[in-house]
Image (cartoon, rainbow, N blue to C red; front, side, top):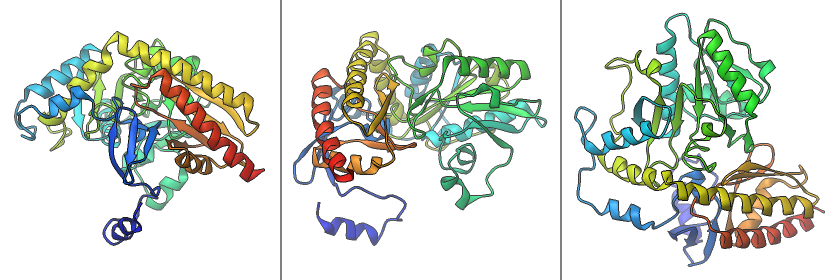
Length: 394
């Protein structure tokens, strides 16, 4: 990559991101291409966003259609209505609110839960290692103190319990909602136990609190079901979705049951760009594709192959501790002497794009169109990367 690009960026972009020394020019299916034309296998999908990969013919067809880009929410548009209807028909939800990102969706879910709870119920329960976004309400529900402390005081009334430990959860009549990820993403790709989520549902019902599932990273086909909650046999009261829904365009949504919707009135929330006609046209097609049973079955089948490949790495490398995940959302936990950042960096030399996560975990969130041959290619390349870093830290 030309150093000139990095130098120009330092002159005009706020330094909030530590970027890898790569300049992407284009992508095709599950591959990215840098400024030198080198091909990389993408096992990150723009952090779970590019669920259908790159240059997907159906998405490009929708983008080429004539139509409005923006009208605001002062008026009706057909694409927004069609997307909302499909989301409701494919889930527990009775109503949908559209916004522009996952953190906005979580922010709105917090507001709706407090509106539902009334003046007496303002508190929230969130969990260790959870991540819900970086705006002030979503950040207040995010456990990582490194993210939180520079910006405190955040919104009050948030209490943290231990993920997958139901005995750590204490509800009373002041709690408006419990917010949880069915599979933690930033927190190390940790699936929730069935008994844990079922117990949360029972506690919320007993105490009159709402249950919010943050499926921004784990939802919309990522686990092999359309929604991660469908693996657990329970339903939340609110669910947040964002990353993959827009096929690369920014969109978020809050799905809610009728009990929550009954408490919402004109003016309670809003978004100038939320649910605009262009992005909802694209999102509608993305949802149609991912909802197809054969598409989800393919995610399950290829996800099983990926899980098996990761288990072989656990068996073959002493520095690899554990593989955990579901569908096409996997984490590979590493010994502390092998920092995950070093493995991600070594992956670039093997033309492999991967992510890091909490607990020194390698995070894999490939496009949902991954095929068996791509899994084989990934295993070959990550083995070479692991050999490289294992020798370096020995």
